[in-house]
Length: 295
Image 1 (cartoon, helix red, strand yellow):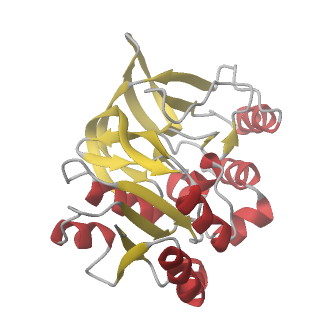
Image 2 (cartoon, helix red, strand yellow):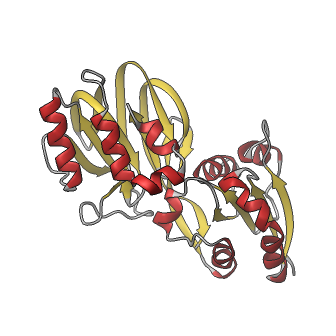
């Protein structure tokens, strides 16, 4: 019996990478025995809207082709369905941070092969007051810059270098007062950056050897960076980051399955690099094994 797959692709991702490869992608899936239904995303009808209007009943596989943002909307749409099918991901966007943590190949043909020949793996998602995110929710003076910057610029400077540059150029006094409830303790202070994420990187910082990151353990990683009060403290913070020293007075790093943030004024967030809106209070909860991805 022929298998059925629904392909959602963003034709603008990666400077049109998907459009140049769409014939090859369809041929590989068809040769693997899939009957394909294909939808390009367009303005006003993104991946989430398509899935809101399209039943996934009877499909063995939903394939998302795009960047982290397209995957974000696909996940939100897919998980509105009861017993959703397995998700496949072709990372062809300008930002593919989550794909790197998943170990997915950058070559499109190789990524298709992973979907065809792989096995379903359960993965966690974060619930940000009802909106889901795959790998990162962040606030701060340079959160949107960090997660929404073109991959070419990130590649040229590196994630860490880019965020360090943001810290060095941060105006003294620009901060985000917050109350954070996590793991039975309360942390209050003025922060310049905060993130809850499920990735091998926190805010672009490699955490190898610092926390035991696992994408399906029911725990997300949390990083808070306190406000440096003067140029000397900014330089000290930058030095700590360059040394990947996260155990200091400026940074708080831990793991949790639930975190509550309270701000005195509406504070903007980004979710998987997409605008997450402004809020004065939000509880972020991990939804363990929320969906299955072909890996």
